[in-house]
Length: 86
Image (cartoon, rainbow, N blue to C red; front, side):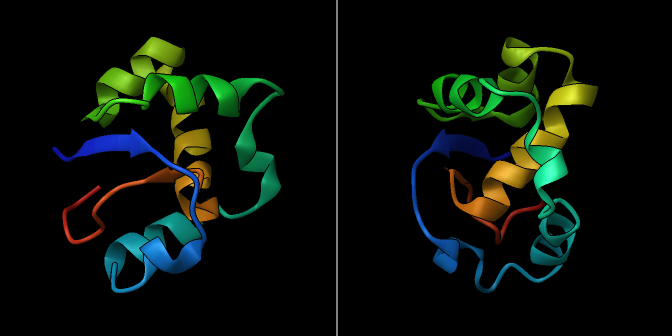
């Protein structure tokens, strides 16, 4: 599982991701960003590289947090090497 790190960037990190790019595109709608404060919590949780499941669990219930993680990746608020499976 890849280590995730929180960084601010543009959409350039999404190029060349193949299936990952298609997966993340499904979370591009703002409804997936979650409630106010969730993005800040995600940025803090992923300030150091860690497995996706660990970071999501730190923030809250992974079933509620994961859509916000994928939305943050799409928007460039979080980054991950897209050559590896999400």
